[in-house]
Structures are given as structure tokens and as C-alpha cells.
Amino acid sequence: MNWIVDFLESESIPYFMIGGIAAIAYGAKREIYDIDLTVRQRDIEKIAKFGKDYLTFGPQRYKDNEWDVVGLQLIYQGIKIEFNTDETPKIYSQKQSRWIELSPDFSASCRRQAFGRELSVIPISELTQYKAHLAREVDLEDIALLSKTP
Image 1 (cartoon, rainbow, N blue to C red):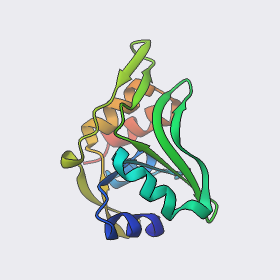
Image 2 (tube, one colour):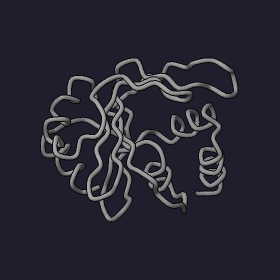
Image 3 (cartoon, rainbow, N blue to C red):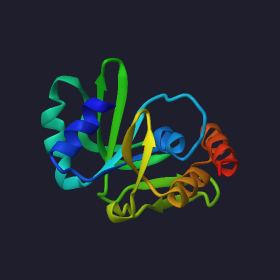
Image 4 (spheres, rainbow, N blue to C red):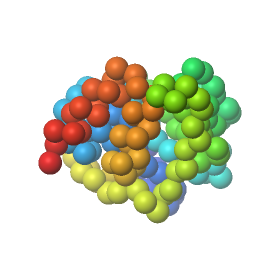
């Protein structure tokens, strides 16, 4: 994680962690499966160029049953690093049975300690909100863990 965060911060690229790393930054105790980040669309090509030797997807639109985002994926030292951008990201809400457009706000991101360093992370209210919409098992577990943290 240090490899990519050091690059983003050295280039003054706004980012925030989402997913499991953000959950851990807010106190959840769980395993990490990958690194998920949101960045600005205008920075995605710079990130792709930096990580070109590890690029496995994108930058381009990705859509499945849960996500509709513009992003890219790197695999660095066996760790999957997935970026999505602020270019009209959407998630499929299991609660509402429809696509929900997200509104990433980099100015609202929080600085939190995790993995021995300070990271920029999604606000906890937005994290739990999008996890409630996705309603995957891991998301519901994260919400339960986060509700027990001070």
C-alpha cells in the first residue's frame, strides 16, 4: 500500500480509501482482500502511466452487477489495487433495486491511521451508506463491526 499511497501523495493526487481499508481505518477488525481507492478522473491516466508495469485493467469503464465505474486495476506484489474515479460512479442498491449515483467529495475525506500510516479515507457515513446499498455479506459484516467501534 505504501508504494501507491507514496506516489499519490508525492504527486498531490487527491484520493480516498474505500472498502476494507477504510473500514479498518475506522476500527473494524478484518482481513483485507484488496486496496480500493477513489481518485479524480483527470488523474487516472497519470496513475496508469506510473503503474503501467502492473496494469491489469483499464483505465476504462467497468460494469458488473454491483459497480458501474471508470477505473483501473493494478496488481503489485500480488495485491490487487483497484481505482475508481469521480466520473459518475454508480452502485447497484440491493435495498432499492436500482442504480444509485455516488458523489465523491474529496474535500470531505478524513485522515485516519491504518497500517502504520495516515491515510485519506471516505467519511464513515458515506462508507456505511454505500455498504448498506451493496448489502454483500462482507459489507454487512463491516457495518456490524463499525457499529461496535467507538
